[in-house]
Length: 408
Image (cartoon, rainbow, N blue to C red; front, side, top):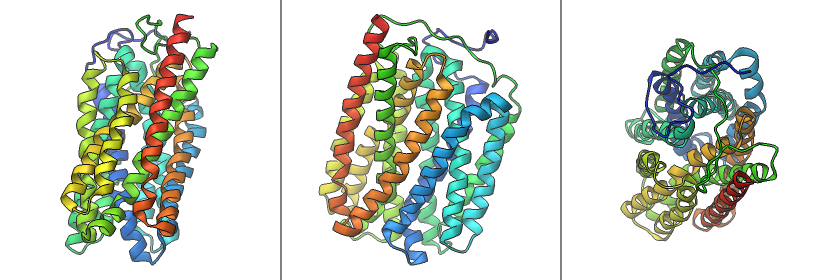
């Protein structure tokens, strides 16, 4: 039997309380958020610096994807063998190594290798942290995981601005990205002091109000719901990464903005993501997370339309902000719902989400970059509303399957 959780572990309470364990785990999201939102807008700059095509530059997304897939394949085994705390500390140490390779290396081989190593470390850390938050907060896990991702994107909000600043003063993109290592070291120190990370919690009882609940993972309803919510995770990560990688290129080609301003404009996307994550957290106590998830995919289309139709840098920033309001809730709610229906198999479900999402993170930026090379960034961005509709459909289907499984 799993150890009895201490009183600080809330497994049935709807109230979300931020304790020291929760705040310590937030550091992993801060580290990953800064990397994503400082390096992704820099890809266009890397391409220009190294003299490579946009499709080749998109291979950085492929490297992140391969690293994410590897992390997904091994994270559950690492947690079982070494414990969640040791897995987290080791993963963050790996991030520091990756940052050194990325920022100190001279060419494309170094940048691709660096982002691969960072992706392995960050994905192990985030996957372990999301499961820990889910077990620790129980019914309030949707709020906890959403806010954790909000903290990550909030810190990441400074990333594009930092890139714009360092590029503007002639230092290039590397100093801004190197901040990832500092965040990883600080988080590893905080996590290493936590003795309660390996505590597990019992499965939650099913609900009867239509909300996706913890149900036996062998039931057909649970299996279908898990696959649908996994599809929502893939759609969410595809949307987010394709946009953050290539929005800079779209703004440059459509508005004539210079490189630094266009890269910094990506902060509008991250600002929208951050804002909605802090709003959605409390809303999950009043509105079913599955409804919020489906609505977020549909709302993202509004932001895309504003961004796609404008030739003004200012309006493009507004479009990115609105798209971010849609994007921000998609990944954390998809993960929270996936873990909720996973029952006692949360680490395995998180592993699947990590490597499946990793594939999406690699394929989407590369595919959009290849389309942009062939037909221009403007035409390539027509992929975005299609992915959003797929995500909304998956969310609706997952909610229905979970409700039926709980009722059965």
